Image (cartoon, rainbow, N blue to C red):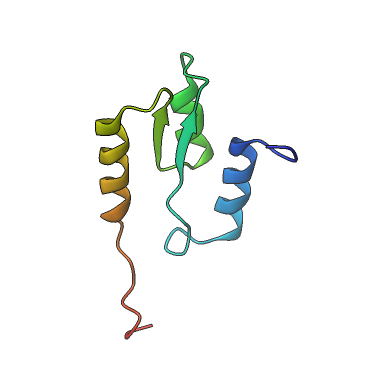
Length: 76
């Protein structure tokens, strides 16, 4: 990203939003080096998928994201 990397962006999102209001963040990176997953999760990302993308891994990450509890609009 031209202005900031994904780790910095995630940290800022986590500072601005409560856990209940925060978007589900999935890291998608070509930098699949030792420790990258941990750095992404430590920054506040919810999941991690490395490139090249493998459909089963992407599907699993998206399924985990869809299981995130979303407040009912009628009760908000």
